[in-house]
Amino acid sequence: MTQQAEPHAIPDGATDASSAPCCAASQRPARDDGFGAAFCASMAALCAETVVAVTTGVFVLLAREHDGLPKSPLLAAVAALAALLLTVLISGFVTAAAVMPALALGRRAALRRYREDRAWWTAAAVPVVSAAAVLVFGAVAALGSHSFANPLNYLIWWGGLTVGLLPAALAGRAAARRVRTGRAGSVTRRVVRDGLVAWLVVGALGTGAYASGLVSVYQPPRLTKQDLAGTWSDGRGGTVRLADDGAAVADGLDNFTWDGTGKDRARDCDGSGTWTPVKDSGRVQGVSLRIDACELSRDWSLIGTKREPRIYHEIGKPGSGKRYVLTKVVKHGKGGSRDKHGKH
Image (cartoon, rainbow, N blue to C red; front, side, top):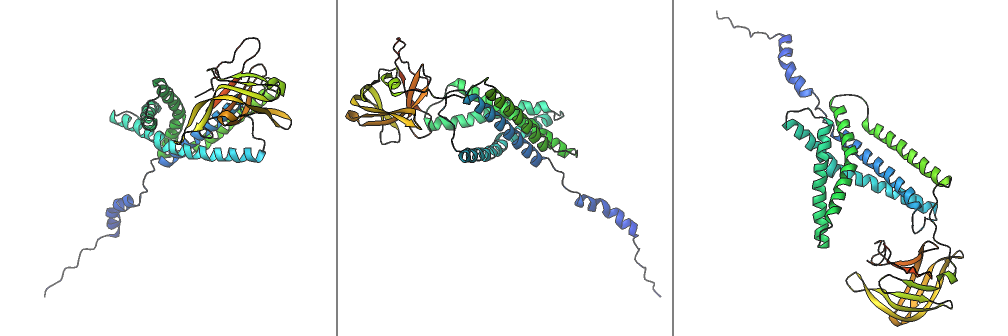
């Protein structure tokens, strides 16, 4: 009689023991490298830097010559909101294009040398990435304008970009390390908090300076029609004489006209015409000049000071910042000189 051997029973414990490492390995969650945390912290740092820098710049520019403040609170609020949204978008782009590559470069450099990934590796990588960014965008700008900028400009751009990226890169590194080491706490929240505090401090100092009278907001000169009468010069031979009776005589004045290619070309304007002061709420804001001989018809805005008034109009595309400026030739012999914002 043949006996059939029963199959050996495998203990349940042995089965669990042999399969446990495999199952544990398959169920272990992937380790977070901190990319998301680093990205958010970097964006927060860049936004905070921009808001604080812009606020400081606004306070500084208020005391300097400017074209005037928005009169509508709603328009100012909409402009501020649009600027804030644009800041967030640009911060995200800069983080992706420059900050994250700097973090990767610093970490890779440390690993290649079998060193610990310390903060100074990231700090050393930032100038390298900034230089690469300046080279790329400088080359693109040169292709568009068919000329290279002054070498000093590239150096200034590199230095400014390095200074701006460094805090964001260090914040991103700190956020990534916290995630990788499993420590609690959000670097992004801390960056937002510190940025808000810095913004409030700058706002309080700036508001206090203007409220106390230590600094005054710039105001265009208050002139009458008699003050506007006289000779105005562009400092390059072009003049216009405004008479008390409203007559005007131009001699070599530049008249900017479209040349058909999207650019303004200056042509000499000679001849007689008329002028009138431009007023807003009873206050002189500029000069309306018309010279029939050269078909010149322009409104000029008033800037400068009462001692050295200037009038200007924009040239080129709207918002280009380019101006054609005339300075009044005063009677005590200090002739009009070409303004730094003069003909371009």
